[in-house]
Length: 374
Image (cartoon, rainbow, N blue to C red; front, side):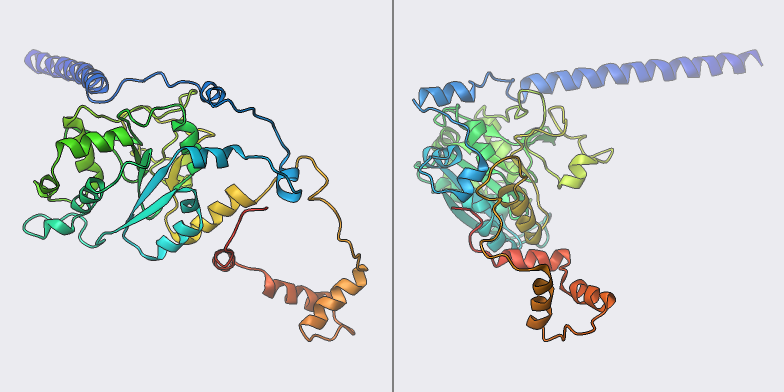
């Protein structure tokens, strides 16, 4: 009986020692690859300091004036658009999303280049045509980029970028230096920026990559349709690693999920993340839109919908006032419905049939060619 208790005690002591060693080893591993495999948090010059160096004066103007009154102000985001050239490379797996990108957030790109990728069989082991993999296609595209663009943005066709916030983030950085930014993760001992959130490389990084890699190197050892992994792998050989893209408050700016999962993350969502993840920066740069229809909705909410604060130009009543009674009678007349003896229930039913569901709303938004207010 004594031997049984001794064995039991020995067993529990062994379990406790094992747990302590595991915790110690885990902490050691995290500390090692955080310091050696990713770029340390660099001091990024203040955007305001950079703006002052451009010899420009900033002035706050009400949206009411910008949208509803003629003016000759240069909008700050318009200045950044002309100052910071961004090439957007879109990996197209669903052609229906391309038009949505072009009509929404893609309008903030100085140029868009599409790469058609076969969406089927994302991971294939064995023989196949390497030349059709997303990595080979992206690699060859990078090899043929000229250097007129300061930054190159690479995104899947289900990603939504806020270009104004991207330019705000990179404005004070020298694009001639080597930068590689996005949402950093680790897989198979390689730290790279996940394609789910999109990623951005500087002109200096493109130059260094093209200088050290021949186009024939693009087809070497590629078995997966994971261009994000391979780009990170090859850049790491050039000592170019992901930087910490959290804002000054430690909040995340690149999000590899849609907003629902960003706000309500699952238990395992951020297990592979290199840097601490905390939602969400007010200057967020990217997130998943899932599909084209949602891009129109996000674009409307971000760029068109206006919360009234102050002003008079956009809040004026109609120049020709119509009596209330005439309004509902005219409404019925346009639909060939007699206005005599109509009940409130019948009137409600007519309006109910006119209310758009989310899909119909998105379809109507698509028809708008321009969202800006002159």
